[in-house]
Image 1 (cartoon, rainbow over the protein chains, first blue to last red):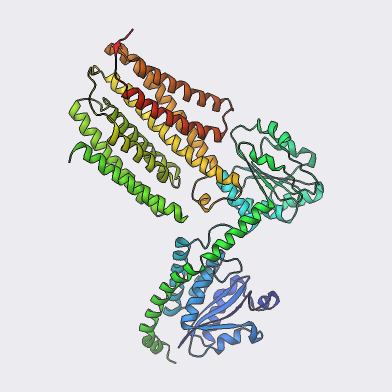
Image 2 (image 1 turned 90 degrees about the vertical axis):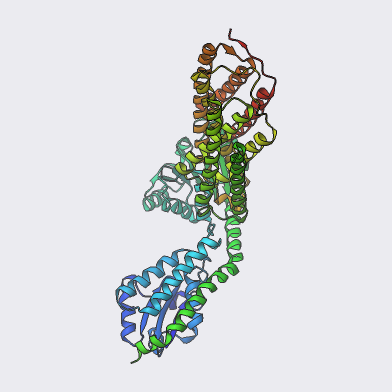
Length: 336
Length: 271
């Protein structure tokens, strides 16, 4: 009897291969059950953007291999100890494209629950997944693997959350649309930012983007007049010189006493005069600042890898001890 | 155990709280699991301080605010009281880490350096005297915690302004929240100080004693904090300035308080 994982991920297979074997969310349970009928004693299918994996307990793993109709060079296969370690690393985000990301834990939990509901799991995988989830919780609480965002948009949102008490009642103004400014506005919206105003020299693009994120488009000429009500300004215009200067900003700040203002300058060349950041209650970050923080956070996560693996080893040893102790009775149970 | 024994034990607990939070602060870990432990440690210290004040009050038959030592312990007690009230209400991370050292230091100064000798000409007893003194000292507690919050604000703002925040940025609350609480505490302290001074006017007439140095100290504090409250109300006090004033004014308040109360006390009939 083998505990096994067979799968492919963003490192072993390009997206065109991954998408061929991806399983839609609604079929996770059914496919796990089909694999059980096809010869696995227990099965859980995990399918995310970056990976498709089958965790199984099997006498023969051929059924699991047959599931992947892709060239073998794209596949990996881990058994027993390596399988347990792999699952723990996946749920802890150590095997993710963005190291330490937390979304994968929720996806694996959903995949496991779907398989369990479909009756595809048994004592071995139930215990394995519970152990892996416990390891993930342990690793996240005891290390900094998930701390600090690693994308410019999320770094900006993290900073906003350290400036404002909550984002719900905040007004965000996006001056000039572009890939990063839109991603940042979306990240702010996803964390609850209240009103989003969008203005751009290309008014059509402003209207389109505002509609996409449930914001409101304003005319490009009107944006300075909005300063008394805005809390966060994202600038990304193509202007060759600063459009927000200390001289212009100082009188505008008088209309908003003791209220912080967060300026996120994504533009190159910069749209906000650096000296604006020295004004009281004004916090200014440009693209370099945000990229540097994101890079520092990535480096900090990498430094946590050894500590994470050490914590995982503790869970691994405990699981393997249980597995070894129960193997004879489990083999008896699953004997054909 | 002696009365002072309770205070030394409280100091030990506040010291433990400092060590616990300092270690967590240095590691850059959030204080999630530590917060209840720290809170309980501070609560236990507060209970010991309360025991001291109760025993002392019982022994002298009035509110224990008759010596510089008692008053200083009362200030530390009031600061811990505000920490215990504010901490859970606002769920402020690491508030205990910033409060414990201040309370520890105030307690240490009282235990090691301040006179616990009753004054040569004791003040006549009146409930108004006790009311005036107690509410004035409670105001000092609110100002103490405002100073603590001000320090947290400056630390956090400094990191945000630097554009290269240290990992401890994630540990402290948002600057806006710190500013709001700082403002509320200064306002609360100012209102209490105002009532304390009104109580002082009444008590001076009732007991017929008037102390020039104390009155000058209280009026100066009232004017200084009133200036801060007024400037904030008029929109002329930015958050950073507010935080700096909270720290500086509490420092000056405490130093001048000790100076005033350590000077030879002379009282004369109320005019």
